[in-house]
Length: 295
Ligand code: GDP
Image (cartoon, rainbow, N blue to C red; front, side):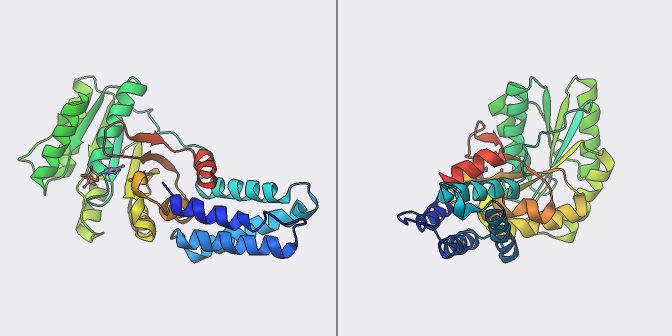
């Protein structure tokens, strides 16, 4: 993942190699290449510009040129900035509710249903929880079936009411069912569409208001770059969500969404999806990701 970005950053730092003494010009050239690498990764112009400005400021503050290994120090400054850009500290999920209600939001095709299954499986196997999955897509019967298939695969019950066309009612009934049957996490998978539209937003806002989830998660396909960021903004304006799930990282060579989303919506990336299998879920660690990007 993020191979293009890693390659380009590697080339940027090459400028500093093979120089006897590194000059201010070498550093400026390197940062220019770092900025270009970020832009190529589909990071927006302002974020990329601010990023290199901050690295430059720190490099001057720490007298990079007078240190023994200026190249290494500059790589470290870039790594620290990448970590900050992706959220700094690792963010957990709030599991304090009884039951904890988690609302999944996002566009159709983003990987919402797959991720709902992955999260249920993660909470069941790693956190010893008893999750209930809820199918709230009233438009696509296939979506309900898909969640049942996922639930069967991981041995998690799926609540659905195929005849009911009211998602608020389905979600509320599911929570009642969870309380009566000892489920301590309820994961509500909602209907997505191919693009942001008012009807979808109104519907999810209604579900959100009615069930008051402890966690509202926004799921987005990381390969969609700047579109992912714009969609995140639209959902955040309506839901003020708690965290982002970046899916399909396994196919993302650029990394623009991972690098931009935090700056735009100021919400942490909590998990990533790294494949189609139920086990392909990772907690997102900004520092580890920055290390990985820099190789
Ligand atoms: P939804 O419409 O948002 O519920 O999306 P789905 O969960 O149906 O996922 C859409 C497609 O993306 C499916 O073919 C999934 O198998 C695939 N998918 C989901 N997450 C990942 C991931 O992390 N990596 C890869 N490679 N594919 C994924």
